[in-house]
Length: 317
Ligand SMILES: [Zn+2]
Image (spheres, rainbow, N blue to C red):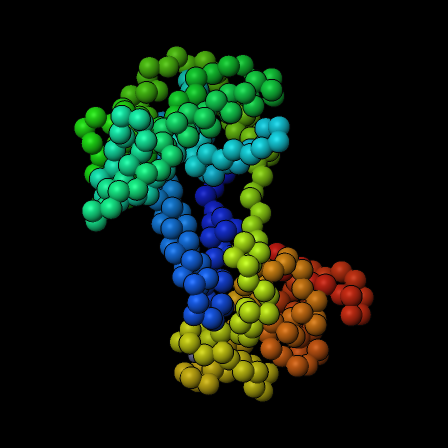
């Protein structure tokens, strides 16, 4: 069993795209771009999620893994879809969730042929190799002894077709357990599991999650974001505050905690902190007393006094 040191989580980008695709109401080009981007991010995430399953099938007993590890070296960052550390070597895994025929041409461009359309992509094996080089330099900066770092590209889509002439480190996700076993036998054991775990935890501490601001990126003003609390049952209506609870005008369901999801949206898209006034705007509630009660009932930590009081939404996510 591979020990997970850094678990796979949805990126901020994916979380924000999901909120915006629900809360941006104009039917214009921007929403098409957002939804298109959201679908691709989500597919990529699902591809990476499949790795968890296949990595459980490896015969490794003393190994660690880190998902979406993002490290800084000098002025720039590099990110690895998955890093696996064994007592013999490190494996940098790049996941591609593409369907159709994929192949390399003579110029070593990476080509996807899908529904008769050809698209070229940056060569994923070169990408994984560059990440491996950066990792090697970072480990050396940190004073770690040199160790083999092996890049692998994994294709996770069910409908992908690889050419026979693909490099041997471009494989289908189903082949990964076998490939890792074979490779790991080639390398000599050079360290102990304790050392591996120590290194993995050190790298986890250096992990920098990527910050996103989708509203700026897609040039959307906060005022264009639909406010209000959605019904969690029919997902259609905006619920209204009636007799101390939320009631949906469409399905008529009552829900005491419907506002929690809206606060989570606010946390993902706007800010970690919210004031009473901001919450009144976002939840579409006029009464500051009602808002205060809801925020206190959610047991959110708060700081400041009076109108300056701001509540920390982090415990909700
Ligand atoms: Zn409803």
